[in-house]
Image 1 (cartoon, rainbow, N blue to C red):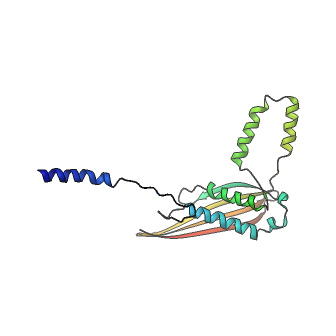
Image 2 (image 1 turned 135 degrees about the vertical axis):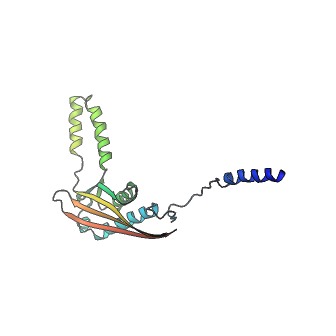
Image 3 (image 1 turned 180 degrees about the vertical axis):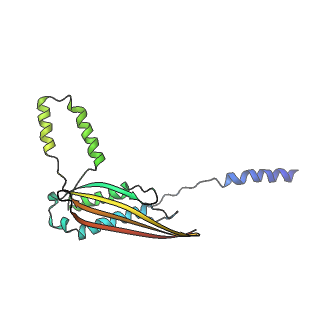
Length: 195
């Protein structure tokens, strides 16, 4: 009977001993692929590649002064087979463009709308003199003359326990006055996964 109690106790303890979770901090530039899906490394690769392409290839940004090129980020369409948080690489692209000193970047649509809502809330309580000052300040807002639109697509090829995941990020810089595409860039990522 003693042996039976020991086996029963052992069977109860085994599932609990395997539930222990460990966490290890990693440097943000460490490459760690777990599932093969789109991850932070892919996001960083896209942002770095796209900004390098834009600053070296885009004639439109080369010939204009910083104050002549005012960009805004438009829609980012995720057409891939999985959920991808596009704001991570788009924020990196914006930051790198701003820091390059080659152009000015306007806040994205959701931020502009939030600022507008703040102004509307206080508008009802403004005196006529304050309303005149508000109109002057609105006239100082920068007019966007270039807009960035982008998309990410993917293809998955799978056979048994092997699969290949292909991601393509495309970006376009559009002249908002003429609708002309003044520059296009792309970054492709391909992964082989074996289970």
